[in-house]
Structure formats: structure tokens, C-alpha cells
Amino acid sequence: MRHLITVGNPFTDEGARRETLDLDQRMRSLSATERDMVRLVADPGFNRWLEQIRNVGGCAHPIYLAGHTTVRDGASGEVLRHFDTAGEPGGRLAVRCRNRRETRCGPCSRLHAGDTFQLVRSGLSGGKGTPAVVRDHPRLFVTLTAPSFGQVHHLTEDGKPCLPRRDGGNCEHGRLVGCRLVHTATDPLLGQPLCPDCYDYAGHVLWHAYAGALWNRFCDRVRRTLATSVGIAQSRLRHHVRLSFAKVAEYQQRAAVHFHAVVRLDGPTGPEEAPPEWATVVRLKAALHEAAGTATVTAPYSLAVGEQTIRWGAELDVAPIRSFGDDEPVTDDRVAAYVAKYVGKSVSEAGGSDRRLNSAAEIPYAGATDHIRALMGMCWRLGGLRELEGLRLRAWAHTLGYRGHVLTKSRVYSTTYAALRAARAEHLRETSDEDLHDLGDSTVTDSEWRYVGSGHTPAEAEIAAGIAEDLVQQREISRELAEQGSYFEP
Image 1 (spheres, rainbow, N blue to C red):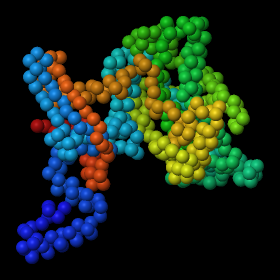
Image 2 (cartoon, rainbow, N blue to C red; image 1 turned 90 degrees about the vertical axis):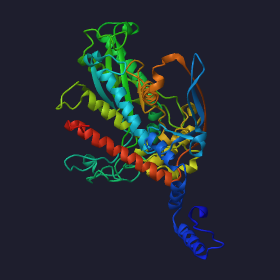
Image 3 (cartoon, rainbow, N blue to C red; image 1 turned 60 degrees about the horizontal axis):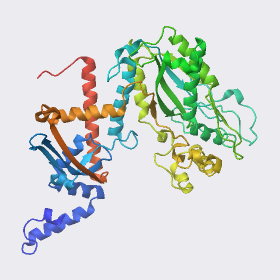
Image 4 (spheres, rainbow, N blue to C red; image 1 turned 180 degrees about the horizontal axis):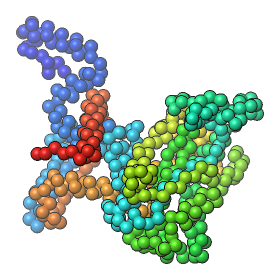
């Protein structure tokens, strides 16, 4: 750093030498982040690095690539465009990490949430390759929960006590079986069991492990119930109607996953065809209720936990989705926004960890509460049993045994994340290469890229966070102006 701040020759100019020493002392008094900031800003490539980070939206953990892309005329071989990272700061180019988790990267999580909104909404209102007629098909918004594994502290309405109905006596472990407290929204007791020894931690973990299989069994039961209700063989139902869905998983305060799902009935060929007249909202709602009460999965028998039957909890909410209406609580846009809000969440919202555990010794530091640590510990213990090794509970101990994707959908519900990302990339290419766009398919592209690093230094992280915050504020201002119908005239 000295060569950047020395004035004159320190060996011949006494004043310059003293100034150099003073600046050196000031540099040593700075924090590591402040020294890194000085280094970053003084770098000749700082402005170009800043432009890269703006281009990736202030990504909190960018991926750095090195390589080149060359675009040639297919007929003449003339080079029309060439980009090489050799001229970039550090010889590399920053790209988004594309992590959906808000705790890992806020900017990429917001981008993923926007894609999720478009994915879910297009399956409700059409667009992005889905016909608009889907808004006339039977559509329901469904919430399915896990069963009770033991009494937990919860938030009540109207200032009522937590568990007043069992406020007398103790459990077999000597703890009170009720709670007369009125909890606040920030009370750390919320979601924690009244008696950890009474709580069925094994059942909780195994329910998570089989939640995906239970959802598949649930969908099969819906189809079977629909077929039975109109006298059609289940094997022939696909020739009459098609069940489409998109669902998102969310961790409750008690650290149990529940699902929010959009369920839709289409014609046999998909969303472009209307379902038969008998496929109504009322019939679909009845089938959902019937399937939620009867769908089960039986876990393999284990001497440690016995035989476990996996089923849904008693709490079930089914609501019709309306296309429009400010007074309607469940509309296309509100459902899409609701699902998109939760796609960036993870087990960390319930006190878990976003990172996999390498050993049981990490559990005391990975879980935020005794309840979470007990669930992780149960995953580790059950994961060591031969009869349950197929569940890979140790590999998924950080998610409390749940190994499903946060959002899943049926094949023809709507567009895909890959299609949305490809469309965005194509739009950016057309914007940046307008002179090449008219050439169409007559160009040949030669690319070679390799991974060379990731992440930020402390100073880089602060600047990236500032860029991300500015972009959020700009989007908020644009949204408010759009809602008010106000636009800046050129």
C-alpha cells in the first residue's frame, strides 16, 4: 500500500518520509474491512468491478468465471463479437450465485421469488406459454399440515392463555401439561414443546422423511376419489381429466413442514383443454377433503421406533381461487405472491441450518433452540439404523429430515424456472447485441468458461450490499409510482 500513498522520494525528502510514516500508522489503525476498502477503491479495475456487481444485482456470493466467447458469421467466418475476461479485473467475470435462500443471498432470492410469482401466476391466469383459459378451470388453494407430535406453546387470539384446557396436573415426566401464559409474537417459547420427553421426535423426523411420498399418495387418492365419484375406472381417468398442481413447503414455528398448494383440473390433453362438465370446484374440494383424511404411508418397521404410519394433520384449509376482486381474499395475484414469499424461506426461519452437518458434534452449534437440536439429534440417531439408511437422515439432519424441494409442480401446470431464466437471458442478449440480432441463426458462437472463485472480501460485501439495497429502493419507488399511475415524462 505504501507505493500508493508516498509523496516524493522517502530517502531524499524528509518531509515526504514523515508523511509516509504517518499514513502507514493510520493504515495500521484501520480495521481489516477499512484496509480492504482502501485496497479495493485504489485498484485500477475498481470501476469495472463495480459495474460487474451492478450487473449481477449486488449478489451476496457471486461466482467468478474465466474464459471467452466469440461470435462469428457462419458464412464468412468473420468475427462479429469477442469477449475475453483477460481484460477484466482479476481476469474474471462475476455471475449470480442464483441461491433461492434469503439468508444466503437476498438479491438472488428476490429474483427467484419473482420467477416463482410468474410461474405460479401463469398457471392461474395464463401467459408464459400457458393459455389464458386456465382461469376458467376449477382451481383451489390448499394448505396441508403435519399431525401433532406433542403439545407446543403457541400464539393465541384475543389474549387467551396458551393451553388452558389442560391446566391441571403433571405429565409422567413431572412437567405441567398446560400453560396459562399469553405469549407474544416474539416469545422464544413459541413452537417449543411443553415436555420434550413426551414429544414424539422420531415421528416428527420420519414424517418429514416421508412427506414427499405422502403428497404423491394424496394426489393418487384425489384422482381415485374423482374417478369413483363419477363412475370412471381410475386407470381411465387420465382420458377425461388431468390433475395439475404447484406446491411450496414451509416450516412452521414448531419446525414441522406444511404445504401450500394450487390445485387445478384440466382437460385430458392439458391446460389448453377445458375439463368435462362434471369436474367442478365442489367435486374437487370434496375429493381433496377425502384424500387428506385417508392418504397414508407406512414407514419400514424398526425396533427403535416400531411401525410408523405417516398421515396428514387434522388442520386442512381449502379455498377457491378467484381471478379478480380487491375484496376477495384468495385471488390469482395474491396466491402467486403468497407462494413466492415462502420460496425464499428455509429451515433457518425455524432455527435450523442452511448447511449440511458433517458430524453429530456440530449439532449443538447448528440449532438455535433445544427443540431444533433434539430433532437434528434424532435424525442422526435414526440415520445410523440399517433399516432406515435409505432415508439418508444424516445427510438431511440440517433440514430436520425433510429432503424435498421447496417448490414442486406437475409437468404441465405452467412454465418452468429454466424457461424463465432462458427468456431473461435471451432478452439481455438481444438488448446488448442488437446489431447481431438481425443475423438470426447465421452466427456461430464459440465459448469456453471455467470456475475460478466465488464470494466477496469484507469491503466487497459491503459495497455489494449497498448496491442491492439501492436496487430494492428503486423497485419500491417504481412500484408505488405504477400503483399511483404516475410516470415521469421525458
